[in-house]
Every structure is written in structure tokens, then in C-alpha cells.
Image (cartoon, rainbow, N blue to C red; front, side):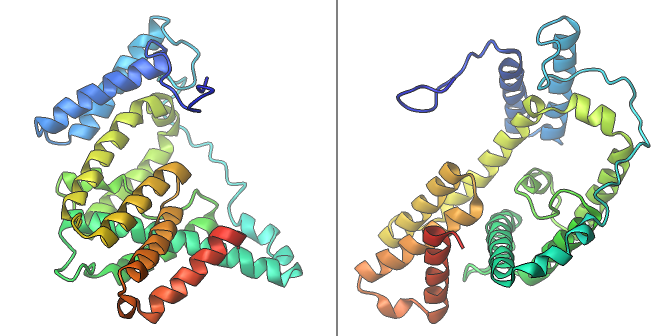
Amino acid sequence: MPNPSSFVTMGSLMAPHALLALIGIIITLVLYIRQVPASVFVGLIITALIGVIFTVLGFGAGDLLMPSVPDNAISTNFDLSLLFGFTRGFGQLFSNIPNMIMIIFSMVFVTFFDATGTLMALGRQCGFIDEQGHAVGIENAFLADALGGIVGAVLGTSTVTSFVESATGIGNGGKTGLTAIVTGILFILSIFFAPLVLALFTSSVTAAALVIVGIMMIAQLKDVQWDNPVVAASVFVTIIMMILTYSISLGIAWGFLVYAIATLACGKLKELSWGIWVLVIVFVIYLFFGL
């Protein structure tokens, strides 16, 4: 239960799923610091096995967040009800043109800036950011992200886009398109093993991987010009708003607004290009009017 004064609080660490997550974080962190190859993957496997042992012994049995032994490991019973599901409501899309425009704008806005924040962070970790702070080849990454989103929507899957979890693969040396191809093939194979994967790798198990991703991402902040008040203010607001709103795009939006205000406060109006002003106007409309 949340604390009535602070809205958040630390729950009981003896709750089965919380204890398993804590054990997994410690194991994976030790493996990561010891630079064990595929430390995150090994940590996931060990944590899942410990979770199964907990469940078999009756500790957390029946808890959906705890790993368990599935009835069957392989399944070919696929739910295709959402395949081309967009066609069933496509005609209604044009029944309200203003609403359609707002929906498309909102989706493009969220997708673009979520992808931008993710790709820039991952590109920096890969070493693809040049001296001017530009990501080399990011146009191709944007194209792949956009096509993935379109194809994923047509096939009725969850949103196909770039995710910060890719930092774990980058940390193990995967920095080319070949890594993504191999990962995609493994995802296709995992469809047949969905009962096993979903039963073992619950959120309590994968929590450790997200912690390691957070460590990798936060390490990139060493390159921020913290002695520059404009940069420091905008970066801080971007980070804190991403956390509080649980949205990369909203964090970037607030960061842009603070950057523009701080730059004006420093009397450096000429440093703000027309493109930044366009984005500021768009962000103001999006944040304050919800378009």
C-alpha cells in the first residue's frame, strides 16, 4: 500500500516476488561487475530457477509474479484474432477528420521522441555519436523503427520499436545489424516456447535486467556539461520528468521547454533556431492542451 504522506513507500521485502527480484538483482549485479560474459542472461536463468524452487516449496505458490513449471513447454496454438485487426475499424477513422489528425499527431509525436531518446542513448553507448553530438546513421535507425511500427500494427503485435533494453546486448558487444537479426530470429523461435518463457520469466525475474540497463544508461551522463547551467537544468528536468511521467517523450518535451527558457534567461536568443521554436510551440500545445 502507498504511504499516505509520500504516495510511495518500500513494501515488504519478504513478499515472494519482491524477495526474488532482490535476489536476482544482487546475483546479476555481481555477475555484471565481475564482467562475466552474458551476465544479464545468466542472471535471468539463475533467478528463474530460484523462483521455480520457491514456488515448488510453496513460497509464493499461485503468485502470478513468481516463476512456475508450465504444463507444456511448446505450443502451436497461436491467437491470430488481431492479425489485420486494423481493417475492422479503418472506416471509422475518417468519420471524424479533426479527431483523426489529433490521433495521428499524438502517435507520431510519442513514437518519434521515444525513439529519439532511446536511439541517442544507445548510439552513445555504441560510440556512434560524433564530436558534434550527432548520431551517425540515425536516419536508417529511424526508418527501421518506423517500418517496424507499421508492420507490427498490421500483424497485430505489441508495438515494434527501439527499446532501451538493447543496452544489455550492446554491453555484450552487439553493435551491428547482425545482432538485431539474430535477436529477431530467436524471438520468432520463442513464439513456439511461449508457455515456458511466460511461466519462467516473470517481472520479478526480469527486474534485474532493467536495473543493469539503468546502470548502463546512467553512465552516459558523465558526458553532460554539468558546469553549463542551461544544459544542466534541461538535462535534469528531462530525466526527472521521464521518471515521474513514465514517458521518454514527455521528458524530452519538458527538457526542450526548460532549455528554451534557460537559453533566453542567459540572453542567448540567437542560439535558438527556428526549428527549436517550432518544437517548443508543438510541445506547449501537446503538454497544456493534450493534442
